Length: 453
Image (cartoon, rainbow, N blue to C red):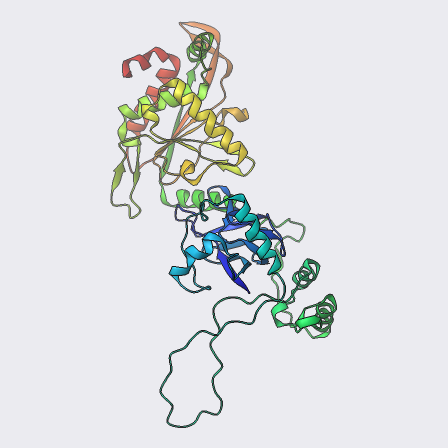
């Protein structure tokens, strides 16, 4: 006898409270195996595939594409065989409670090792169990003392928390009901054994269309010609974080032009030697870690209540990267311990993951300082908003030929503009100016970095 299992959205970590449905990977009526991915969701940190711990026939999907599902809310229900077709995940869930009680699990690794033959056998058993669902199983209720006066009617038995399988076989019938907002559980089927047919759904649609509909006033948009774009997923997270940063942090910005000719010459010299090519971003990252060692007060953040400055002992260097999902800030862990070549490799790896949309939540959180190379967009300067709760960000404009006075002579040099935004609560202008001047000096005379090695 098939039993319906409800799989809820698991805790995806990093304090996330929900996720947006990006793509359903299964359909109602499809037979799935244990740990098969059923849905792709987008959190505030990344896009992930969520595997289901049950094997059997999918009976319901919860949440449309673009809809946000809270952690702990139902994702899918699966009809599994009551005679052994539930798989290892079902038996593991048994000690935690009844069929309807949620069981806390990690995101991956729900099932246990098993042979391919046993999985195929379980899937076949689940497919055979996909016909009309059993009635809800009553839960045993402790006997209560008889009331003083006879009750007018005996109370109905308490049903288990397991959702019943709606007697529908055809996915077309389910889709038709979903498109018209018809609750299949409220319909009485005219087919064999109460099976809901297409005519039953059409009858409900016609009845709903004939009934008067109460209309509530809907606020019209301010501009009827404007396109309304809801803030969802990563875009909403970016908006909330930047808004919070602008509200809470008294940020100030200073900037300076720097002659990067020698830095570019050094890079060309390094890349003529055997080994991996060194990127400009890696050289700038190396300069940042050296500057933060000299000005550690800028590698800090302010406590949420504003009463303390938290000075970090390690440098987790974030860098702004543009992806198809929007602006993301991957984090290079312990950047102060990495040499130029290792920084190049780690920056390249995280950039590629950002473009592919495969960054993990851990790779997008925990930064202590951000490097923003907006020069790749062909612009010279910027006054960026700080990446809350960090206290500082270095911005680098494009490196381009410009007229420059060099050794008392007018010359064409490779010039860039450096901008530095900082939280004025953690330091005053002298510290910020000293940091920026040190960075500019290292850009103009990269040999100065040898003093910090």
